[in-house]
Amino acid sequence: EVVLTQSPGTLSLSPGERATLSCRASQSVSTYLAWYQVKPDQPPRLLIYGASSRATDIPDRFSGSGSGTDFTLGISRLEPEDFAVYLCQQYHRSPTTFGQGTRLEIK
Amino acid sequence: QVQMQQWGAGLLKPSETLSLTCAVYGGSFSGHYWSWIRQPPGGGLEWIGEIIHSGDTNYNPSLKSRVTVSLDTSKNHFSLNLRSVTAADTAIYYCVGFKPPNWYFDLWGRGTLVTVSS
Image (cartoon, rainbow over all chains, first blue to last red; front, side, top):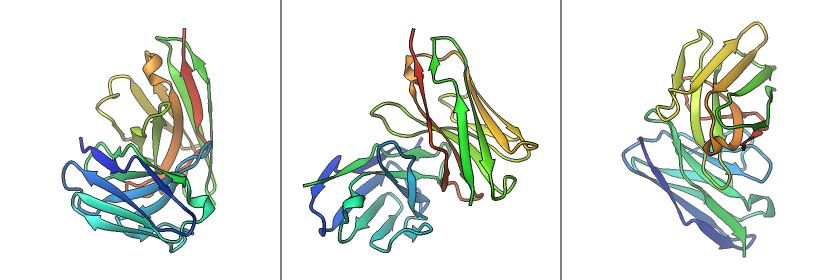
C-alpha cells in the first residue's frame, strides 16, 4: 500500500503567519491527493481534493499543490480556528491511505 | 444537505462482533458510495471498506477476513460488522460517503467510540 509521510509532526506558528505542511507518498499518486482538517471531538473536514482544488466553503487562504510524490498544503494568514491537525489522503491506489498528520499549534 | 447519523455498541469484550449502523438523510443515497473509516487513540485514519448501491463491496486487505459492510436501500442505511475484535480494534469509527469516481470523503458521520476491553 502507499505510505504517506507528513512533515513536520508539529508546527508552531502565530496567528497571521503562513503555514506550509508537507505530504510525501512512497510512490506516485498523480494528483489523487486530499487534505483534511481534524479538530477535537469533530469528524475530519475535507479541505482540498485533486491536490489543489478547494472543497465547498473552504476559505481561499487554504491552498494545495504538488503531484506525483510531493505535496504541500499552504495556509496563508493563520486564523485562530486554523490551529488543528491536518491529514493527507491518497486515493490513487487501493487501499486508500492517510498520513499520520501534522499538528498545527499556536506559538 | 446530507446528514449522517450513526449508532452501535460502544463497549465490547474481546472476540465479540462490532456492529455499527449509519443512516443517511437528505441527498442522493444511490448517488454515493459509502465507507467506514476508523481512528485508534493517538493514531491515524484507517479505511475499513466500502459498499455501493448495487451491494458490491471493497475491503482493506488488512481487515478483509473479519469485515462485512452491508446496505439497506429501503432505509438509506449501511452497516459495519467486524468480527473477533481485540483491543487493537479500539477506535473511533466513522461512517463516510463519497461521490464516485472521486474517492475522497466529503460526508462524515459524527463518529462512534468503540472500546474493546475485558
